[in-house]
Length: 118
Length: 118
DNA sequence: CTTTCATTTGAATAACTGTTCATATATCGA
DNA sequence: TCGATATATGAACAGTTATTCAAATGAAAG
Image 1 (cartoon, chains in turn cyan, purple, orange, green):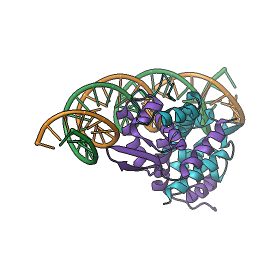
Image 2: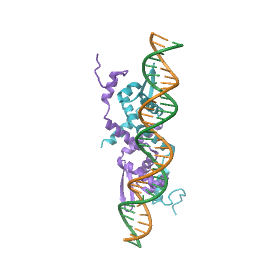
Image 3: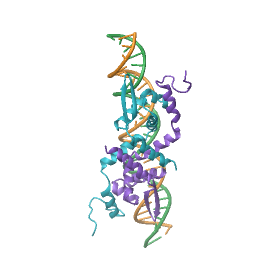
Image 4: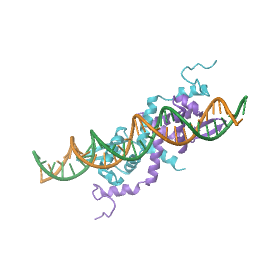
């Protein structure tokens, strides 16, 4: 018998395929982290914030103005964007200016946008 | 005065910037759709399903086996992936085979993966 | 037509998430 | 030091969502 996988496929329809696919899956941790990243893009408020920052560096109050949101809501979302390195910030007196951290953000959003336009 | 924007920026710090950024924002509908798309990628179960389908076409039961999930849970998620055209399917007797619908899926995930590896 | 198998669907529950409101921190000027 | 301003944070509430379980399709075989 060519089958010797104990964990998988006792009732599987295609045990060989199941085993092969399973073997090539990335680690659970990687898949989890990836989902976490996309989760961040999966909120329209955060997407709006990112699009606003596409144009130029902005302070918190201006982002709130642009998007018609409360300052608190914006600050909460910026915190999340900061955590996964999508935005960076610099302080100038009382004001904190946010900007995109790298170009991955643009690439990822561009790919998403491409899929939508069908 | 060079400012004449009625809707925005009564209390904004940089009214001119606010107005400019706001003018260049995509429509709310587009931004909402984009967030909806990323929301689909933002769940580790769905990400796992997509990665499994990277390898080959699979039927529902095999996906469940590969990922160690209930058939029902997989079916529910496949429904969502189907709705936004990320996967397609074909029926063969009682069995339904799922596969990736286009290469956008790979591109989007590749971009996300690139960001994580830092 | 009845049984069996693969998948789908619906309802219910539990967990998560974004906003709001109130409060706290931080910086600057008087 | 005190007040004003910009931002951050914490708790609470409301809305959303993924899973489970049970039941329902849909398709082939006898």
